[in-house]
Amino acid sequence: AQSVTQLGSHVSVSEGALVLLRCNYSSSVPPYLFWYVQYPNQGLQLLLKYTSAATLVKGINGFEAEFKKSETSFHLTKPSAHMSDAAEYFCAVTLNQGGKLIFGQGTELSVKP
Amino acid sequence: GAVVSQHPSRVICKSGTSVKIECRSLDFQATTMFWYRQFPKKSLMLMATSNEGSKATYEQGVEKDKFLINHASLTLSTLTVTSAHPEDSSFYICSARDGIRVTNEQYFGPGTRLTVT
Image 1: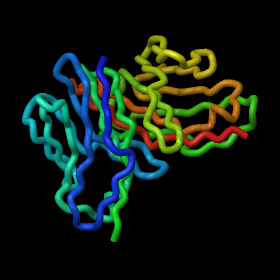
Image 2: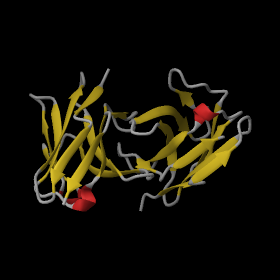
Image 3: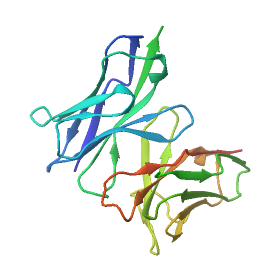
C-alpha cells in the first residue's frame, strides 16, 4: 500500500529565506504526487503535481518540487519565503488516475518577519 | 474553472439532530466526489468515495448509517450527519474529480465547519 511521510510537523523560516518541506513516499508502482496548501478554515489548493513527466515540477506562488525515485522523495522548495506563505502544507500520493489520495500528516509553515 | 463549493460553510446543531452538507461542482461534471474529515491540526481523513448514481464506498471504520452520502447528479453530492453528537464536530471537506477530462486531480471545496453542542 502507498503512504506518505512528511518530516517535521512544523517548520519556521525567516522572510526571504529558503523554504524546504520534506515528503517521502512509499509505493510499489510509479506514483502520482501532489502538494497542497491549506489556509486556516479553508479547503485545499493545489500547488503542483508530478505525473511522470518532468521530475522537476514548478507550481504556483514560486514553489517547485523534485521527484527523486532513488530517494523516494518529493520535497517542496521555494527560494525566498513570503509572509503570505504561512499555511499548512500537505503532500499526497495516488497510484492511478482518479484514485484515492493518501495524505501526509501535514507541515505547518511559519514565516518570521 | 474547476470550482467546487460547499454549503453551509459553518453550521452549529444540537446533539441528536441531523445536518446536511452540500458539495457542488460549479463548472464541470463530477462523476466522482470524495468526502474528507479533518480534525484540528490534523491531516485529511478520507471518509468515502461517491460515484454519481451509485452507492458510496466507505472507508474502514466510517459508519455508513451515520454519515449518509448521496450523489444523485453530476454536480451535487450531499453528506448527512445523522443523530449528530459532539464527537462529530469537525471540518468536513469535499473534493470532486472532473468526469470528462482524464486527470488524476481532485478539486477541493472550501470546507464546512460542523459544531455539535
